[in-house]
Length: 193
Figure: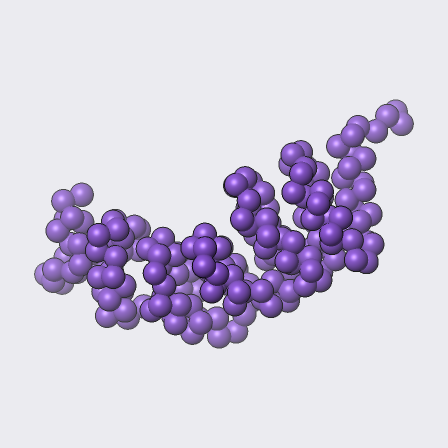
C-alpha cells in the first residue's frame, strides 16, 4: 500500500490546481503536454472547477489540437461551464478556421442559451463551409427548429460542387423533394444513391 503511481499523483495535483485561484496557465501547460487520458480528464475537470473565462480560453485553445480525444475532452469541459463558454461563443462562431466554427456550432447546441437559434440561423445564411452548414442544420433541428425549405434550398445551391447534398441533412431534404416530385439541388445524385 502507500505506493502511489505517477498517474495517480498527477491526477491528485490536477485536482489541487482546480482549487488554486489563478492556476489556469499551469493547467494549460500540463494539458498541452499530458498523454495519460485519466490525467487529462483531471486537468480538464480542474479547469471546469476554476470556472473562469481564462479557464474557458484554455479549453477553447485545445480545440485547435491535432488530438481528437483532447478536442472532445475540451468541448465536453466547455459544456460543463456554460457561463464562461458562452462568453467565448461569438468568437468561435466567427473564427476564420472552419473547424473552430464547427466546434462553436456544436457548443452552441449544447449550452442552455436562450435565443441561440436566431444566431445559428444567421450563421447558416452566411457560412462558407459545407461541413459547418451541415452541422448548423443538424444542431438547429436538434434544438427543435423547423428549417424553411427555401433556406435549405439556398444553402444546398451554395455548395452544389462540394458534395454538400450528400451530407445527412441534405439527403433528407432530397428525399422530401423527391416525394413532392420536385427536382431539388443535387436530387439527381441523391436519387442515384
